[in-house]
Image (cartoon, rainbow, N blue to C red):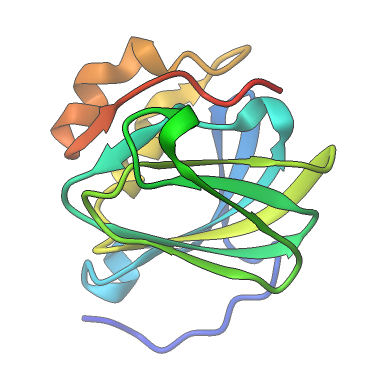
Length: 154
């Protein structure tokens, strides 16, 4: 059963994802699968590869820093590019390729996935010295995510 809740920064559960720590602000279990919310403190090197989700819509709220979003095509060069600053909201519907990367040295971003099951993938990756998304292609596919290209360069 979903519950009403308020979570201030730092009150969620932290877990390792590659060489960073993510905060699970709201879990899939807490919302009966409706949404999962993660707080990312990102560096430029944390950008995911260009990818597409088949099962969930994804939204981002930029809390600090400036973030560039690439959306809408299977190659970075053909994507629409949008820059977002603090307070910006970005929506990425399922089946629309996308990636994102801080333009500033760091940025803090809330990531919302509807429905929220994809959080299982993020938690399964665990700690590593750097991102190695191609090592997890099967895990991504199990959650309906396909990699389409390399991440933006730092």
